[in-house]
Image (cartoon, rainbow, N blue to C red; front, side):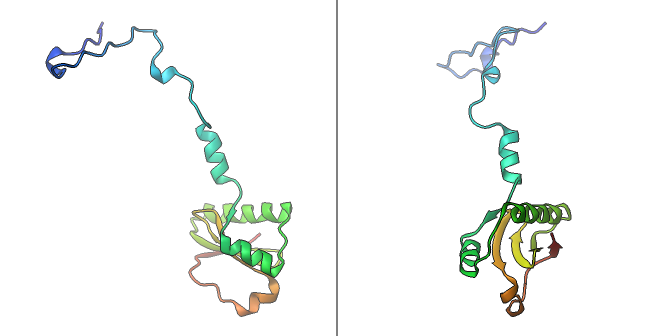
Length: 130
């Protein structure tokens, strides 16, 4: 049986040895954790998508409405792209194209069907029809 007594030769001069807790005694690790749990933070980071300032401006300027169902389909498309290892993707939802940074789960821009003919999508590695 070991009592975890500090070796006096390893303790610097002028420093009192730190007492070890007795077996069964609460340690600092047993103290309640403050703040959100890891699973809550992970869930919040992996659900939904965020929109860049540019994307929000495009949505407003082009009058693109985002309902709950559209957001759910967009999120599903991003999840599917992430599952395939995509980094930058175009996700099509009801004719609207969303260019998404899959790693950051951030919509970079949005293009409605009226403006689709004028655009060329570059620097993407996948396309998803959601």
